[in-house]
Picture 1 (cartoon, helix red, strand yellow):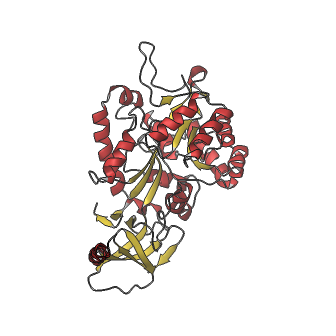
Picture 2: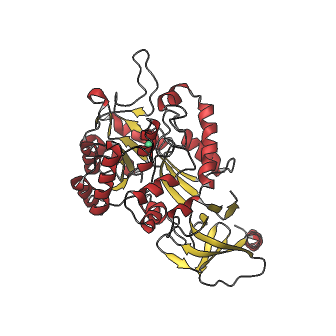
Picture 3: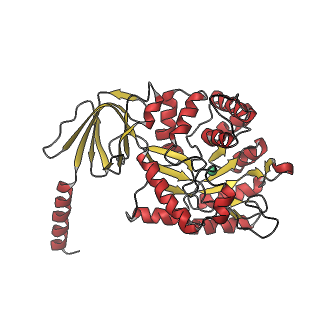
Amino acid sequence: MHWRFHLVLILLLGSMLSRTQSILLIPDRVFDGESFLDGWQVLVQGTLIKEIKPVISVDKGTTILKLPGTTLMPGMIEGHSHILLHPYDETSWNDQVLTESRSERVLRAALHLKASLMAGFTTLRDLGTEGVDYADVEIKQALAKGILIGPDLICAGRAIVATGSYGPKSMVFSSPRGAEEADGQDLIRVVRDQIGHGVDVIKIYADYRWGPFGAAMPTFSIEEIKSIVETAASSGRRVVAHASTKEGMRRAILGGVSTIEHGDEGDAEIFALMKKFKVSLCPTLAAGEAIMSYKGWEKNTDSLPDRIKAKMMSFKLALQSGVKIIFGGDVGVFAHGENARELLLMKEYGMTNIEVLKTATSINADVFGLDHKGSIKPGYLADIVIVMGHPGEDLKAVQSIKLVMKSGKILQP
Ligand SMILES: [Zn+2]
């Protein structure tokens, strides 16, 4: 490159940097992803967090935002969403997959993304399009171009199921499936094909309701799961497994998956195995409660259904075992933007407020391999949420959004 071109480039960069906006945020306290820091301040420059200290001196031209009565925390990371689904009490899953057009589902997804972001969720791990091919990957590309506003996405694309196990099912015609079917040796080809289509993680269904009378039963063998994990790992990708039965969970753990979704039949033995193999649990408590409510259960008046009682017991065992628990509610089963329902249930089922807040920030960032997200630290992405009140004292504060910042840009709810 010619030296004169270098000079022009340096001048250009210099003028761009001087125009980079700096914002000093002054809440009552900061939750940095680990602990609360009373009276601390955060300086954002451009898209990044520049400083976090008790008192920060700033240049002229820095915008100063005083935010009394608030807590500043990292943008929250939803661990299990389906932006291409909407609540099942509006339209059943079967009818969404079989009768809603791709255009309708994508348009709905755009609204879901906005609702999630404005509720303080700046990254979503989206675990399957449920019959809309790679629409999630395509939406992610549109987000990168700035066509619409939304959280960053970690996409699973079509997801993989064992032949014959998944829905929707019809006795009349061969219906489209909510995920891609594959078995045995063919799994290697399908994993590679999904990676080629741009998925960030591989999602598999290690069990599904395909047993006698619709009971959940295991699907893939350990050998099949191992081949999926090995193929995905070769491209640097992880595998997440839907599993609610004990045997499905056991096979997924021994097959080498990174997280288990739901895990309803998890007991002390299975959680110990998860801990040993460093597999994290995404309990999706909110989906379980939502589905019971769609069946007529009134939480505040009716007694606890057996399914909820069992889930509460299993969650307690998970807490006692020390298995790493991540935050993910299976949002889409219930309304997008109401992601915090899962956080409140994690507390109700036995976690402390600070444990819950860590799962939604630093722990999810760590488990999903997201560098420079989930904590308030210099050099980290300025994905920030400011809530009214003190979520360490009253967790419901996470539902009182004052302001959301995505990559340094302020969005007012
Ligand atoms: Zn799900």
